[in-house]
Length: 182
Ligand SMILES: CC(C)(COP(=O)(O)OP(=O)(O)OC[C@H]1O[C@@H](n2cnc3c(N)ncnc32)[C@H](O)[C@@H]1OP(=O)(O)O)[C@@H](O)C(=O)NCCC(=O)NCCS
Image (tube, rainbow, N blue to C red; front, side, top):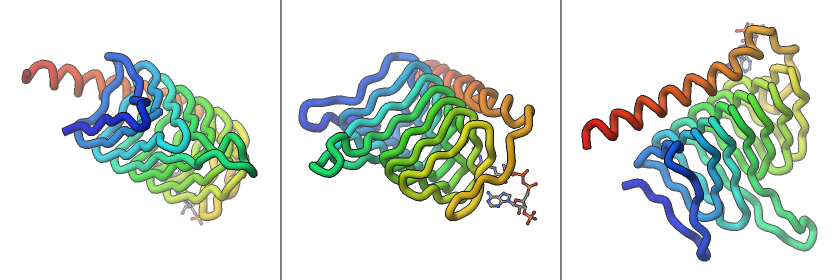
């Protein structure tokens, strides 16, 4: 039932270490790094621009990933580029933005075109990040529109990596289970 589809001759790319839940839909130019995981009902549509999902990054249930096309005013458009060890919580909307490494995007958050989220940032659940905003490394951001709340604690910084590691373990368990019932 997994829907991994090509669009205009370009197919999603990933290796055997990547976990993609059968109910997700992955279309076109979507490039997944090693040990990435895609959970139930995710939609990632790399049609009018490309999507990069970094190594060990997890995209949790019901999240939507899309991009903005290239045009005269904006020749590169807005691709979606997600770094390594990123946790994208449940029901997140990521559109045409750049997310660097070890970021946690709280569940239900919406991030719009041209945003850059620097490495080691946590975004609280239910936040809205307006177009072209830059979120500075080392801080917690919350709210709609998002505001810088405070610096992350050492424990929270460590958790950003831990969260990604947990999801690599989860996807390994799921892959093992899938293999064992075949
Ligand atoms: C923001 C967060 C990290 C908690 O941060 P915190 O500083 O420990 O927050 P606290 O619980 O001490 O609350 C501090 C204040 O922020 C508010 N707050 C907490 N989470 C908030 C959020 N997501 N958005 C807006 N305000 C929030 C609290 O109500 C509180 O307000 P008050 O001071 O007026 O009472 C947490 O609430 C959160 O959103 N985590 C994301 C979890 C997630 O989505 N994970 C995804 C993977 S499963």
